Amino acid sequence: MTHEERMSSFLDLLLQTHQLYAWTYDANMQLLHTTYPEDDYQGYDTLFQIQVVPMIKAAKANYTPHIIYSFFNLAWLIDFEVHDGKLQKVYVLGPTFTGENSYNELVKEMDRRHLSIKTRTTVAKTLKALPIIASNILYTFVSELHYLLYDSTRDVPELIHIQNNGTAEVPSPSPVSNRHHGIWAAEQRFLQLFKDGNPDFQKALSESSHLSSGVQHNSKDSLRAAKNNNFVLLTLISRASIEGGVSPDIAYDLCDFFAQRIEDATSQVENGNVTTELLQIYFKKVCESKENAGVSSIIKNCCDYIGIHINEKLSINELAERAGYSEYYFSRKFKQEMGCTLTEYIMREKIERAKVLLSTTSMSIMEISIELSFNSRSYFSDTFQKNTGISPGEYRKQNVRL
Image (cartoon, rainbow, N blue to C red):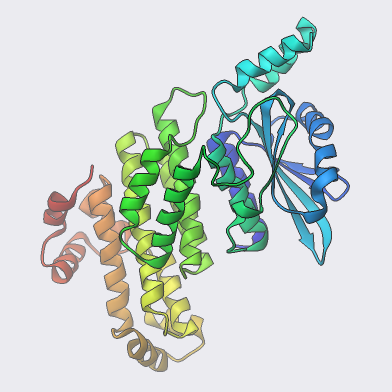
């Protein structure tokens, strides 16, 4: 996946899950692109040009990520694409409210300004549909935006510059402000443990989830809220896995796969099962990357390819050709470095994926055998029992999470 494709996927994801619009401007602040779905976007663009652009121009010399709170308590996330010290593009996410009282504050502010009824009605209609996203989640989004722009592994929030031109009290420029210190610390501990391949990440995640109320929004749809929180977790885990040694191609392909799984979930239970599955698979990839630290890039690339295409029929000849070697040489090299044959590795990966599907989905054993490209249900069942010591049905009874 190219840089542009990753950026486009991220911006589209924010629109679909949080109704958070994205705006791309050139160095002269002329609008190049927006994910705003309507043709009539001039209102938001005008609001941005009047309220935010002067603040950006006054402080953009350092080109660090910005969270700007403008009039009417609107928050905007801004970052800059710079090459060779020259500004190329400005990326903007927003606007959004940051609390349930933001809309009420908007009404009060319009009253204080003695705006006409017509103006108040127009503004209220335009802004009432905006999402409400907690400040700690905004830190996550602007951090991920910066990461996509620069592939930086530095803790981005320490770079974030906050400007306040509104009337609301906003968080401290430090991500470890008194208001969010506990959430931030727990989240950072969870991500560090995950990157290190430490199974204690589960406990840290539980602590982080307990401290944070997650994504806030107007919708009373509890499933939508759970999905939104899952999307945030997926974004964090995808980045953490890359920093933990997982191939970016693997991490982004898994992100696309699980994003669709989250969106397709029809119940809280199903959404929760996707959470369990994505944590399990990403963590397994992190651990594998550390175990295979001494493995050559050729074999690592092969393992990554197998992981991405595990649902397909994979042949040794195809994998050897992709690596540019003869089947005989590549098979020997793989076994020398991995300690097992290619066939054994592929089958082990398929069985691991089957375990996840058996424990977290309602797919039938026949459907799973087809999903993983086994020749028949009986061949899948025999292979599963040979590798695990029990049948697929028995494994499901012992491990089902539905």
